[in-house]
Length: 265
Image 1 (cartoon, rainbow, N blue to C red):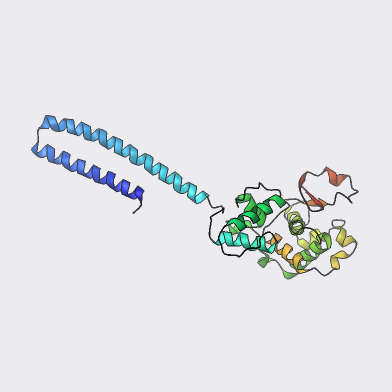
Image 2: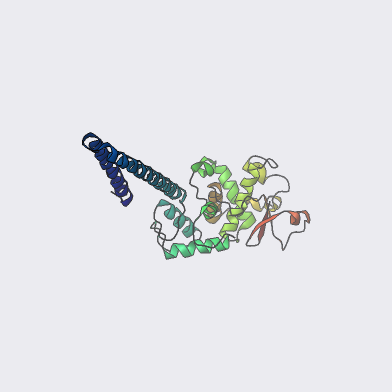
């Protein structure tokens, strides 16, 4: 039994004993004296009920905070930590063992990831950091690559490879994410193929590099984007500032820069 449960039990026992004493005194005691005891009992009852109410409110608040506090941080253990370690190891941020324990190595890897992706560098895998990794508490928030056709996956990987090979891994995922963000937008075609082959949309299609064979990294980046990781934070455009000649693209609201690419809304 917890300390709080023991405290509740003591209060309840005290109330039961008080009631028993009042009833007994009314039966065998002096009415005037027992009337004073009754008033005292009512006051004590009011105090105890108020105390119980406050304690229960505090207990509910504490439980609510525990249910909200689902983020992972130093000292945490569990499946979410395992997911974090698995993804960070695949992306080259983490070199330790995948043991589900949020230790110093995992902490350093999360900070490294946050620093490279424009997030608050606090070492805590909060909502924004988890979403940037493609980890969601609700399965309804992510798009699973299991429901994506192999042709779409292959086309997306080819786009990543032809447009962003040599870029940081997060930058390759971001390129794939831009394609998927366009699919969701009413301003673009609503299929992966439609977005990629839209006239003038991607240089790789225009110069034929879209037909190059993608490597495993490009496939991994495509899958991570399909699974919900969006390092571009909802961007629908990207360009290389050192080679861009279109003045209009510079007018787009800047979101994040990863490697040589500037991602925009």
